[in-house]
Image (cartoon, rainbow, N blue to C red; front, side, top):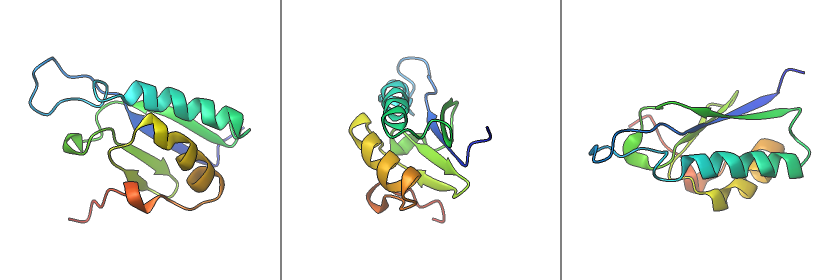
Length: 105
C-alpha cells in the first residue's frame, strides 16, 4: 500500500565537537521511534510512513522533520511532540504552528 503521507525526521550524525551539532545527538532517533509508536497506536501505519533522514540542511533549528505531501517543516521537535504531530497533523491534517519552520526567510 502506498502511504498517503510521509514524515522524515533528521537522524544525521556529525563528529563530536562539530559546531553545527547534529539531530542525532539532539534526540532525532528518539523522536523517530516515538513517532512510529504513535502511528502504530493511532492505527495509521498503512497510510502514514515515518522514516529517518540524513541532513535536511537546517542544523541550527534542532531536530528537524518534514512532512509530505504538504511540505510542512518542523523545528526543535522533541519526542514529547510526537503524539500531537500524529493526531493533529498526520491524522487530522492540521500542521502544528508552534513547531513550524519558515523556510521563506
